[in-house]
Length: 280
Image 1 (cartoon, rainbow, N blue to C red):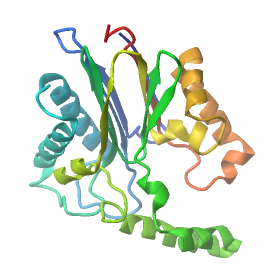
Image 2 (spheres, rainbow, N blue to C red):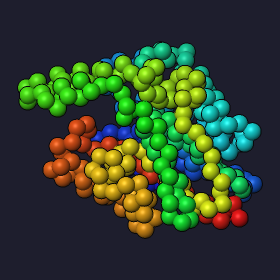
Image 3 (cartoon, one colour):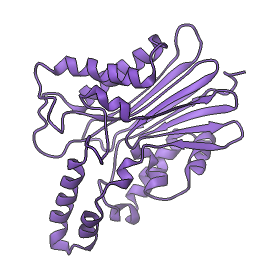
Image 4 (tube, helix red, strand yellow):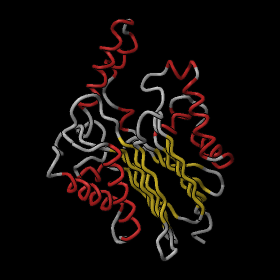
């Protein structure tokens, strides 16, 4: 088994809010990967005395430990227990009911000698790459289907002097749908959110590698349209994660990148874990 991890903050003036790790149990059978993308809060109160990096470090550490030590638990159970553990660390000092309490997207995968299990919550992505080169993308695409067409149109059509207000209204509308019915879900303080995650499993025979990406890295496909998921996986396998992140940063610095909505640079993380042959 071979793994490569790369993470890069969106700027040198702020902390990286992504978390990545790959672990192999002492038995030598199988392994797990964890990728979290901490959600940067807007200006204002969050109800919490702790930073997003504080939260993702503790949630990621719990996910890693339980994925390796508790093969009897499902990935949803592991996520729920990890959220509960993390919440207990600051329940006495922080308002965990605040809608902007620290939170994160989640990619979690675990494999043994026969199968690979996966869990995805929110807009980070997991790619399952077969030995034949076929790529299956595991996506939680609820963010892409929010009922916000009027707000998007208002931002698109706003005059220069009105665009900031239109964008603020759009952001507020998105926030109203966070961890809400008909909206989208992230890992925060409620363990019940684990039931909302996209889960499944794949036979290890025929599987070459698993690739986890935060949305700062998936921009190559989703924002800049440089190629589909198969093309992205091919780039990673041929040139490695550093090459992908270099391409993303180049595109962000381009005039086209500056014209895109949202922040110009984002934290970007990639995990490439080769498991070929483990199921033989």
